[in-house]
Length: 521
Image 1 (tube, helix red, strand yellow):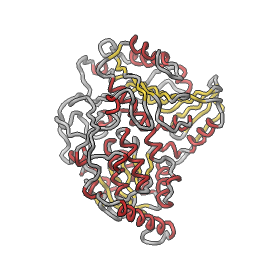
Image 2 (tube, one colour; image 1 turned 30 degrees about the horizontal axis):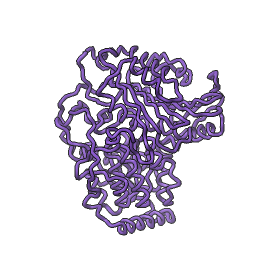
Image 3 (tube, rainbow, N blue to C red; image 1 turned 60 degrees about the vertical axis):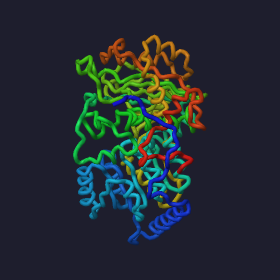
Image 4 (cartoon, rainbow, N blue to C red; image 1 turned 90 degrees about the vertical axis):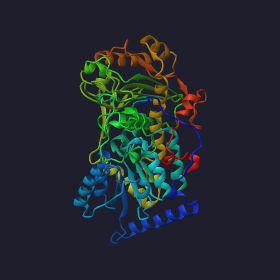
């Protein structure tokens, strides 16, 4: 399988057969759903008091969506969309036991969205289906809750924003920290000057990710419709190059976005939020690699089936503010990063969160429900905590906005999700473009000395190299990938000095699974 991201900027059709509705027809569908939702909220004893919901995707996050919908008092799960027949039936059995009624299983999202009685859909598919499923849903008059990253590439995020606006649909993104009172209070503390002036934030995904197995030719599970699963992505040959069909797609760029686009949108979203950033960055640079698995396997020729970075540092320049996001997928135990160990109160295990650097101290998001403020000597000066089920709070917020027909009530609207997911896409574009020319340590150091940043670029590189060497990575045999430093026009969503990078703002689609551009929805 080619490790190059296939892209195209050609004009392609933007409607499926069932979505050839005129704007007037779409508006009438939306109007009918508004009446339904209003009547539901006005009369809780009526047979239509609950919104009809479909869950698209029955994997791990799909299970979380199901749980939240089952606990909601204003929704009922009437449909389940899943291309793995075995997984679909297991989830449907569980729903029937808890809900009392069994959802209809429909593997093809196109047929699912033909169901007029549906009010809302939640999308927990692999990343490459997120935006297309959401655009089609909103064109069909449904409100949509979409897992992060809300899109697989930058152009898809803009298409979702346009669809939500045109069809007057609610579109919530699964960045639950926006509904965390701990994060809400911590952001307020930052913006009120609690640790002085803050212009720089560092997002961390120090999260152990083992090899997903050797690159090869594997059998697709017989209970999976691979054509529907692939959807917008190209059909591969050999069709499956990873041993584990489910979940490990995260680390293949045809479907996923690596941990920068998996875990990353949670942390980059909090970082943007705390810094008050409401735009794309002006410039980006990324470096790193998929490294270390050869040493772990004691096989110098071992090729992991993944093609996204497991070690990555990306610098986002916003002019007077800056964000750096770091991914470490190798062992994160026995960390030598003294400052980060103190900020997270641990040298062992995962560090997933955000550090805000103020003139008078730090604010650290250590988890979804816990943040802490510290002075310059690392003394805790304030803590922010929240209990309860954050998934439930986030889903309830979405359903409330659907009932009230008020997008301003959404804690994580689609534009916020697009800007945060876009950070991962921009970083990956720089990274992918650097793969053809690997760099020595001195090459990377020289380049970083020329890159504008509010971070200490050299110190961050030193920590990254020390981590790789601690993990026995032979950087002479397996050198770093150093991406180009790219200027980005956030309004036009293109790279004014790189046509090659601009081509990666979108992707090639199979004709029947084409995600329309923003001007086509």
